[in-house]
Length: 247
Ligand code: NAP
Image (cartoon, protein in one colour):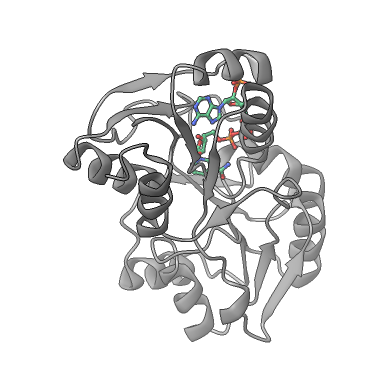
């Protein structure tokens, strides 16, 4: 099997490792957004495909595509759906479970970043934003005069208000550190996306412990009819069924 993995997540790296170990031919694809990305095992290509057409052309060299990109990387997921439809290629979405089932009464669910900015403005004067550098600009109109602490993986080329502080961290995010971060900033609201999974969960625990409300952005919907599974084992089983030899 020749498998193209659209990656940039821990699940994608896990899948690549397990497929390489099983002897499959794998290519992991990264967008190339961050310098020194965590690289998966096996071959890697880096950079955009040039939209649906480019992805369809490149994907045609594979037997199957797994879209294991981040739940908020909605454009590449839409493009993968259209490209695989066009190229008549099997496609499966691998997406970790969200946090909706763990929701607390102190969480405020919103549909997008502008709504999150306005909710954070209503809830506190010292917000902590953990929503990724690409979305920060959407918080400036509502929070430009607040003492914001923004945590990002990569702080290159950010143009933010003077009252904002930027800290860089790419994890692992430990509960004690998350507690310290929220306390040291005297945070009164935490803003996050529903990234799901365990890796960034400690900040939610720390906020709950410190009675800090959380504004949480709902995930964008998947394209209608897109097949989706929640763990790597299910992807491996799907690929095994697709494999002509059943191996
Ligand atoms: P996006 O808005 O959905 O995609 C924008 C464009 O980036 C796509 O149209 C595509 O360019 C290119 N692209 C995205 N993922 C790619 C991949 N895996 N391989 C090749 N090209 C890719 O994506 P994003 O939200 O900027 O996220 C970029 C990457 O970072 C994703 O791979 C994602 O898994 C990872 N990531 C995102 C987040 C997040 O919160 N959004 C968090 C953690 C990791 P072309 O149209 O030219 O093909």
